[in-house]
Figure (cartoon, rainbow, N blue to C red):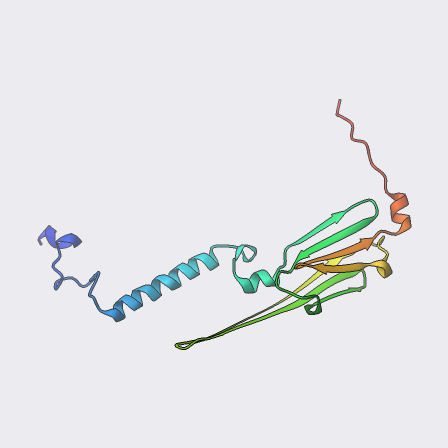
Length: 170
């Protein structure tokens, strides 16, 4: 057996079973589609769901911040592209629930083409509330794509809170 036949760069094109570039547009399309699916599956399944960078998934998990002060809890949720009519804020059984649905349609008509894009996404977040919240005084405001929910603490919770001094270990 001739060892030169085993080296791919010595193969003649007609002898090769693995041709790199046949010039056929269908083979080029097949190659590009394979690469597209490989890249998609590599990016989708090598990351956790929270790291996916897809609009549908990011709409499912809005970015939220929860903070606490002496008198209140504050929740802010980033909901870009939404209106207050698309958002529902409710309290039931010591759970604050934020729900929303985003619908977007973009239509473009020109002489040589027509394009219609639609995207939909919903989210549902439930946040357990501490018992010391005044549920009847909860306020929600929406401005420039940011929802802010303020949950005032009860008088009992405000009176009972105290700062604990941290001492160095001896």
